[in-house]
Image 1 (cartoon, rainbow, N blue to C red):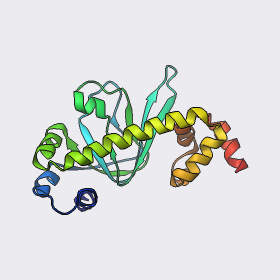
Image 2 (image 1 turned 45 degrees about the horizontal axis):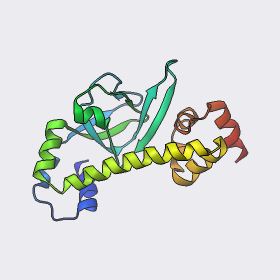
Image 3 (image 1 turned 90 degrees about the vertical axis):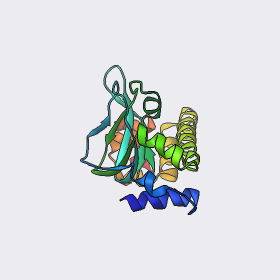
Image 4 (image 1 turned 180 degrees about the vertical axis):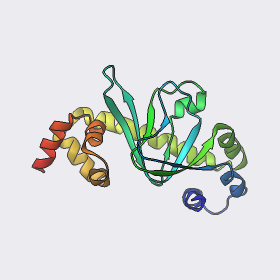
Length: 189
């Protein structure tokens, strides 16, 4: 599994990385079953995860314990509750496995060591932050302006694999649509 992470980092930063093996040794392998929490609201997020295989849901609960999904994260990407991870304060989001998942996890101490040992990794971290922020802002701004049907079309165009990979309930939560409305509109396409 660590070789996949190596390829990911080299793909972003190039081959000229001193101390990369030292950094990779900071990651631990996590194999976790479907529907398990990695982070729960109110806990401190202790890890940044690289997803080797599987799918994660990042979400919050409303006052009636309904889920609102901020993101669905799949292989080859990073996931964490970054505000909690960076500050040590309790998380405001939950992260749960949607599928049996194989992850590589790095704790805060290892992450700081990685940033110091491989300064180029700062570029990857910045990309992670920028991508997360840009995706969230884009989704919020776009979804506010789109009808429910147009949100489904957006998903089919920009994240088509999710349509067959995760449940309709999860997709509806991600799109901010009632699951019955989602099913009815999806049938029209």
